[in-house]
Length: 323
Image 1 (cartoon, rainbow, N blue to C red):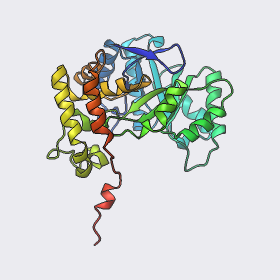
Image 2 (image 1 turned 135 degrees about the vertical axis):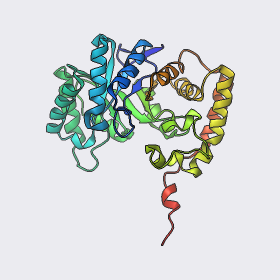
Image 3 (image 1 turned 90 degrees about the vertical axis):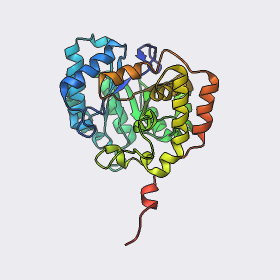
Image 4 (image 1 turned 180 degrees about the vertical axis):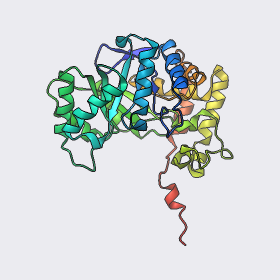
């Protein structure tokens, strides 16, 4: 396993993490023993960076992840757990209560990284109020480091300017080979400020695994079916990238998912993808995305192909037919 620094700290995190969104009813993995095997396999292969959130299954994900880590017996200082507090909970009183509950559910004495999950855009909580409240949790030892998930640079600046004695060490943003808007502002900002970027949806909700084709897109009962990237108009756009991923994967004896993740890691030193896994085999596949590098020519081919892609999120609306 490769490791890198967490933000500006001397803490070392694995260059690929494990997201725990799938440990919930939304993504269909709530069988504890299977989830425990996944977490155990990740630890066995050197993954020490785990991500969850309060809203994933309304605590189900945190409970499964925390219970598994405790049962495995891994030393607490050898794992880094990040969890996220939703924008609705950023009223200062809610911050304290929800973090206390999160610690109880996780079964941990402290949270390594606490991120605001998204801005409180519907509730108008002032940024400085919840920023200072989160900072107090650091001062009291309940949280080690702070982060922001899905925040624009303007609000990041507002949040950071509200802090007195700590700083942001982690961003969590949607970023993958075919959804690259984060490169415009957020990733350059993170690089300049030495902020670790947890890339969520690093394989575009599975679109870059090579599993799907235009004739085999997620069906209605699959939660992915409503994702714009799987709309035929968008999937047609990304298909050349999938073909190229398969071609490069064959060249290196890898799988498309491993090439897609390797491309992210090569693209910036601050990127730490946090894909999920639904079985232990998938964990092993994720681990094999690090420890090697494709050559520059192959990286560039993917760069050039994907840079021309623009995923449209209005596709379902544009196809609406009046009655």
